[in-house]
Image (cartoon, rainbow, N blue to C red; front, side, top):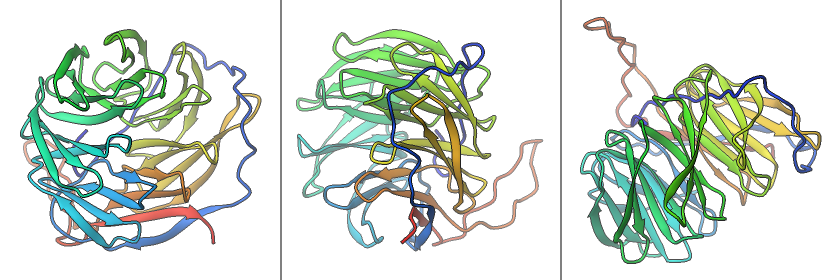
Length: 347
């Protein structure tokens, strides 16, 4: 996934059948809205945020470091020398955190309680992007974009336990807490299921016609996956079989998907400046229950299941420069304008 500006995902295994799902709560009685904007500032791109709901801290990758903020945007510390950092995985049971450093082809390990850097270890593939801690097996997975593989580390000893070929460029990942890990493969439009105990790929499920899959959320209890793609669709997938349960329209420019177990809502963060909210009923029907204004460029997200708020990083943007060599140009970020948009229950 590119730092600063993201993308989307999609899915298909034939006609979308409406398969009965585990009972879910009715659509929330509360409404969601943009609550506030945290003016963080600072230089550097960004990718995926992480949240420690227990301590109320946000971990924000910023190119060469990870900023650690309170939920109000107050600086609490920093993890330095994480070159090209894309993501942060948190292991509260081990009091550790892990970062995927895309430019240095490495993973930084830090003490979660104090933010002290403990080690930096090399990955077995280039450009580690998504990173995931699987508590069921006490392993850390880095999904290496240019390497087209995943490195599996022992989360305690940091020894490399395996290198798993992905067959394409891996993007975002999720785990079910039972020893299964899932990851989107962007350039082949597939969703992979990995047996984290046996360290092997169990299944490869086609995501077509969805394009360039990136963001992935999971309802671990209900065994549902929520994947997003460039063609403005969210795919709801049975995590046990790979069967497509529903396709739901979302906004343009999405790079992030997430699920809040407390509300039963799935989210898609759309760079056009909206947050799509999707909810499933007891009959297995998934529908868009809200489209909440966010801000332009807010393409990734993290959900805090403790306060049911969604945090979306973005910035203010200058005019788009003229295209060069036939390649479209991106609007530049205005210096010091980095911010985090907070969407949550109306108060």
